Length: 320
Image (cartoon, rainbow, N blue to C red; front, top):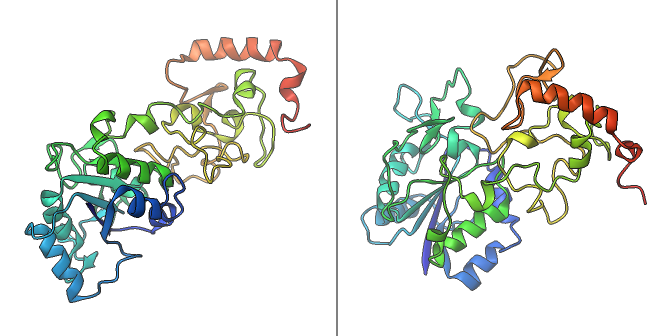
């Protein structure tokens, strides 16, 4: 039996909603097939009031083994480092988190807020929010750069706004079945099995990207979303086009640009009108290019690609 405790800090519950929609495996599969016991979850737990406090203290004191601590949402430190803006079970949530992290064999951060601080940690960050072990791309976060759970691993980061449901359940299964050692973490503590490729991998619009055949309208079934709509698929690490959402689609397949929500810098905008869904350019060259592409090479590639683009590159690829 693998005991899992799930807590929420400064959160919108989006990752909980995603988790409950998991399909491979489902939440029921976790319990029935993989021996996972959910000690408590804010949407599923039966305990209330004093009973919740007793459960948490039993985990901290070792009376109940805490195998996996899952945390969703930011660590709220305001005001002035006290954490009083986010109280839970008669204490600041950050105090529970600190004590429980020391008792857990594995700590898993789910969603952008828990991994890097997310939207609440944007400047001026009035809630003094942090991720568990990062603040945006800076190492440290609430638990500190050198934190290691009892297993010897740092916080396992599963970013996204929200995280894909199957990323969450598959990592829980890997831990419960003793296979987490086979899953390498990248420099941001993300499991490489989900985050070693770019979102562009598997995108059905790659041929349009290659020939610079663009679209400037949302929902269009043809054309690349990078050039005029600011799609961040070429610069974002995720498996959204390999492990489809609801087994059906992804943002780019639905005609919406990738927002880069698995990267620490998300959300990518400077609060100026019209800057969210627009590729920022200098003399026609994007200010930010896919990795390994120089400004000079991009300019040459653009000219050649447009001159050699076949007629079918402009056609609707969904047309039968």
